[in-house]
Length: 152
Image 1 (cartoon, rainbow, N blue to C red):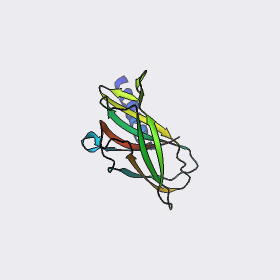
Image 2: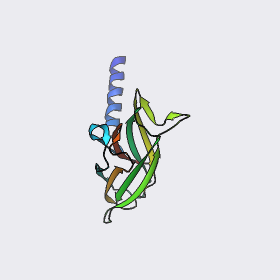
Image 3: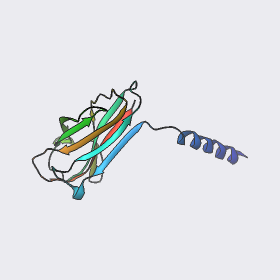
Image 4: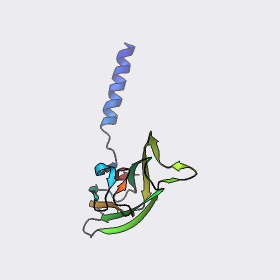
């Protein structure tokens, strides 16, 4: 009888948590050949339907230990509903000589989530684009890039 009660409780918890809506958007695009060309742009879109809630927005990058620099310069484009695309140049620090790579890593792959301030004040579909603007073309050892939006 005790096993039956545990099973029923676990089943109810699974049903309860599977019905909750996650308030997260994340889209990561694989960089072809792990060599990010200046001409390759990561693009996507996400929907905002609650402008009363604050959001946290992150640029998500994955790279290997073979990445040659401690930072990366990106050109981030964001298009609000009904507006044109606006671009910002962003410098993301990926590591330091003293501390090594920042972010989370497993073996030789590292993921960095950099918080960026983007006001999401309109309901609707937002479009974004991310391109690398480093001197190297292609930029080796970059696996993927993308955007993450979390509702707080």
